[in-house]
Length: 124
Image 1 (cartoon, one colour):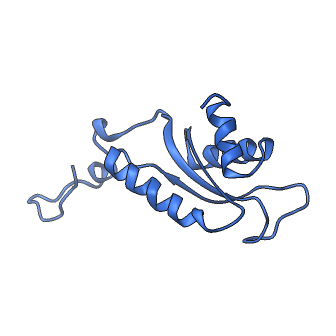
Image 2 (cartoon, helix red, strand yellow; image 1 turned 180 degrees about the vertical axis):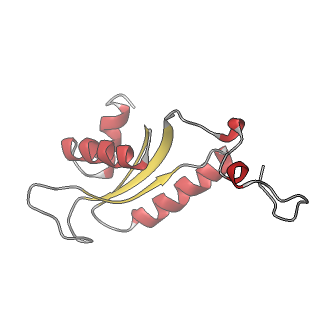
């Protein structure tokens, strides 16, 4: 619970630094992330050995409706821009999601259809 300074008596300084035990989460849990990457080098300069440049990593919302709206917004932004690839994957952090997306995109052809075929399989 938040600590209010308007209380009488005022809270002790050692009580203000402690979070309630039910709010502390020390485990790293996987969560869905949306990753947008550039495969052409048109947005930021790239080194020759780095073909994939991750532009944004965004954690997906917990609510299904919000996640759908978030997905729709990101797909709409990436639709008309050539060379942008959108990937949705599970990771433990934003850095882990960027690393996984860079590895996935660099090992698979970079067009959206080819990427989705590689992720879903050829029978989809």
